[in-house]
Length: 205
Image (tube, one colour):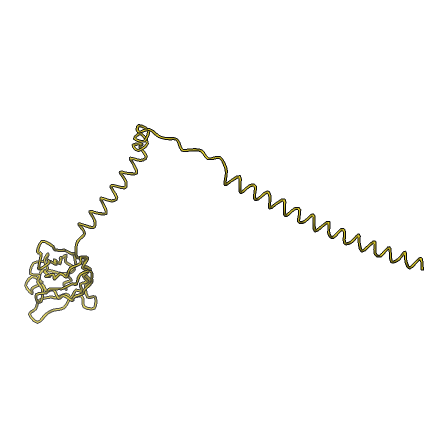
């Protein structure tokens, strides 16, 4: 009976020792977390309430001196040049852009009257906000002319296309061969001073 009582006391003692160790480890862990939390809180408070240096008050002469430093003047000059260039390009850009492509399916062909003709495709882009009508003319080769009068109307801020037939008279074509330089002129019917010229090549057999 005495031996059984000693065994019970020993088991009870071991159980209590285990419980104490577990409580100590738990308490020590909580202590570390508390100390870390306190340190982080103190650090954040120090950063938030750190020393604040008042900005020095500048006198008028010092302000003028800083405003006219070389670096400030250079930056201001560059900004003004870019602004002026942008404004100039917006106010002086041509109201019409033209792209001319010769019909590659037919290099050149002979018309009923013996003249030689080429076919061109014109792509027009109106960069203004108003509708414009352009009269088409050609020059650059003796005897060159349009097969019929041509005008192209382009709505504001839109594009339009046209197919133009250009001819060189039979007499002039007899003495010309190969590719010859020519030019298209598109003049605004409402404002003749507004016109665009575009170079092209006329092919002769």
